[in-house]
Length: 318
Ligand code: NI
Image (cartoon, rainbow, N blue to C red; front, side, top):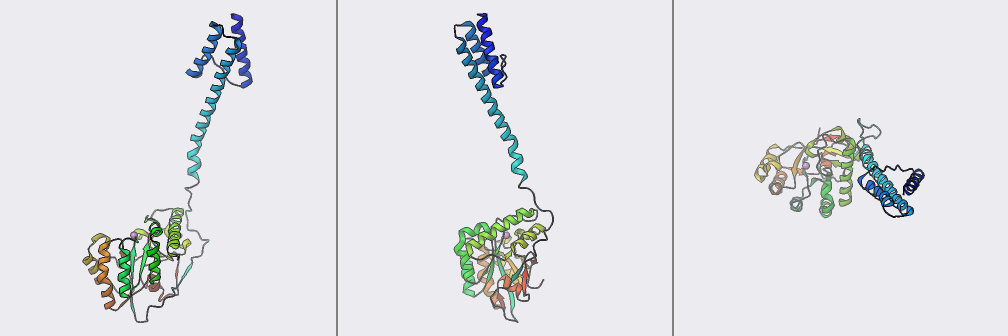
């Protein structure tokens, strides 16, 4: 019996030397230990042949090796994943790039302003919405024109409305992709956001926007950088009736009519029914007061040869 045990031990040790595995009869894990001990015991106490015992031990060794390898692989994967994915996406330039010369934006080819005209640019942000079609009807009935600063993420599903705007002589500007404030955006994020909006608007309307209005009017170097790279002038406003706040057609009407003067850019939002209701009176009354209602590009380029991408404009002369 002692001879048999010695033979079995030798076999196992020889096998271990060949495979490079550590065999510890005191066990690495409970499972391994159990199997190995069982194999040895089978050989010792019972009449199992040497060959059978060796096979059982081999199976145990193989299992141990596989388990170890799998564990090692899993550990490697989880350890390296976070570092490789995060390092490549967070780098952004920290200064204004100087490689791109600010692009000149050419005058629109419309000629709707006469020399002695008083002009106003009505602008509508955040849309299009379910109220935009009615606003277009009102503008059409009055022979008036406006500028729509649309959100890139609303452009895709409103292709017909956007095409109608251009067909009827209005202008479409970008209001960025998703109304994120650009106040603290990195250069890369600002450019990515604006580029996504430009592409969506161009695809839906057929024309690339040359104006951008920053959400909340928030200014930053990254906004100016992205606008420059996109070839878009930055448009703010000179009259703000705060239509999103009051949501009352009479208040909106009074705030516009009492503050407006020649060359103003008026900030409104075509996502509120109250604003479109107000326009039923604002538009014909402005016309009665002798104003011509034109697009932002028409208003700004009447006394300029062209606009400059990345530069901020808030009214006719500024
Ligand atoms: Ni907005």
